[in-house]
Amino acid sequence: MLTDVSLTLWVNGDLIRRTLPASTSLLDLLREHLGLTGSKRGCDLGDCGACTVLVNGVPRLSCITLAADMAGEEVRTVDAVEPDHPLVRAFDKHVAAQCGFCTPGFVMNLSALLEEDPHPDDGAIREALGANICRCTGYTKILAAAREAAGRGA
Ligand code: FES
Ligand code: FES
Image (tube, rainbow, N blue to C red):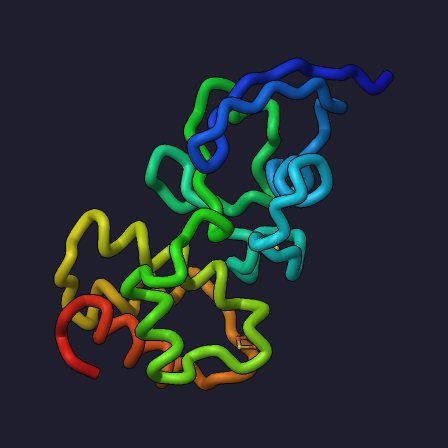
């Protein structure tokens, strides 16, 4: 039998209260219930990283996270990333997005990295990039953008 759960959480600084089927994923809560479509549904299996959000500042794959487990937590999505964020400007400058479907996931993983360490070395950047799949760019321009946002030149 399907049951509903009621939860309260923070999303991009707003306090949200919803009653949802217990099986609702965080990605469905964001996209279908809150209209926050920045986080993308790629594989829906936890493999591609397109759905990455930050939960209390830590990257999380929203497609394999139950919304019910987010009660009381602070969720941040790419929808709240300002256009003048250093990562956004660096992605623009280096043309690091082609179709752009993967970009939200990269931006969220890299923003978490930069919040923890504003000047990560290449090893740390590559490790962060490893959480996301891009079918278009070959990663070189994304690496250049990440290095620029880290203040390390391209
Ligand atoms: S859509 Fe979540 S990891 Fe691919
Ligand atoms: S830019 Fe198309 S998948 Fe990355």
